Length: 502
Ligand code: FDA
Image 1 (tube, rainbow, N blue to C red):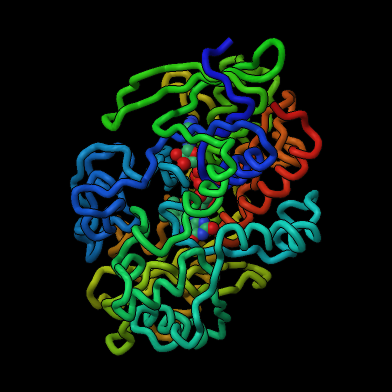
Image 2: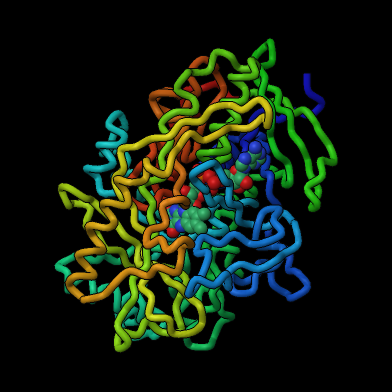
């Protein structure tokens, strides 16, 4: 029996976790949220909560002595990364053998570091990926609910057409159109009204000051300002930071006991404690939740978990690439960090691609058009437990990304041909034109309907739930957080209606 007890514990504080915490709190269930990162609410010596992308310091990355930004180089020079002090910074790059996964650390998870693109997947593809989920209910109820709760908004088209800050998007749109490709506006959780005031010099700049992957000081409706604020407002939810869940074992009379390590800002474990609960919700993200369940199964504390735990992982077909524009096609020294346009070629029967037109805000003209392509890659990875390091190992080879590179290449070869342009070779190291070794969109590992039932209840145990991106089977065709949020809303509605709570 554990010293500490909460009727419900939620591990993590990203999208799935935040939905669970709010809905439990509203239902009157006393809920403890455990987050391994820190709470980002206190300004540093420079008066800012987060550091900028251009001048990163210890706040940028999770226990590193040098930053590891996705774009390693510029003109083949290592000018992007900087030496920093080791500290629980907000962005982590989890390195597996042939794939790096970028994740957010802190209260709000990925919402602290992401590009805010709030995209609802095309309905036919949603139904292809999750056929057992009632799409009418998702598109009628839970997607609209998620968008409203997340504070999704769209850029004013007239402002978009005229502002220097989106010149880079308009150039890429023109080049896509020259190739006969369609572009679409993409909603975002960044407050575009605030952004217009930034541009007008009436508000402190954030998206217009290069802030994004190491956090936004203004304008971004991250989860700490939406779902988590509402969860705390119920009076039933508390959040413990710098607290990492490691072990899960069942309590003989029902419920679970967690082993939790509390660490200091030097990364030292200052306390190891046990916390009991009746219901346990895993919202530690695709790789975090999967590792927790895999470890529990393989170490024998939860031996009855499904053999599907650890399977069905994918990277949402992510590939990044850059094109070199002609000298007259300037992209502008001033670029907003929040993407607003995508090239939508998902209906392409052979090589479906949805490509975000990404900013590259370096503060000077560089003539680069950058893209994060989402492709339909049938390859899946799996996790195995490595006893020596007590962690999960991702079985994924670089070659499994070939279908993604092929699809992205087919689209951007077309754009290059139509505009007589070429790829950039200097951005990703090793003269590579396609970055095929990292992802922003880890999905799967505890797939809905396989490792869990159709609502995220872990098979084999009652009162144990998966509520995050681990449920999505490896691909969703667009940026994933709206789907993760909506699915969590759907599952929580059912769980709160049917399952006995603490
Ligand atoms: P998420 O990863 O958000 O949260 C998990 C939380 O659990 C983290 O806070 C972590 O610290 C914590 N945790 C993990 N293990 C733990 C443990 N053992 N104990 C305690 N806490 C633990 N998506 C999108 O839709 N639009 C976009 O524009 C972008 N852009 C983007 C840019 C960048 C740079 C990144 C890294 C990611 C994106 N994404 C994105 C992806 C999006 O952020 C991602 O899909 C979601 O954050 C995933 O939500 P989850 O709820 O699954 O977990």
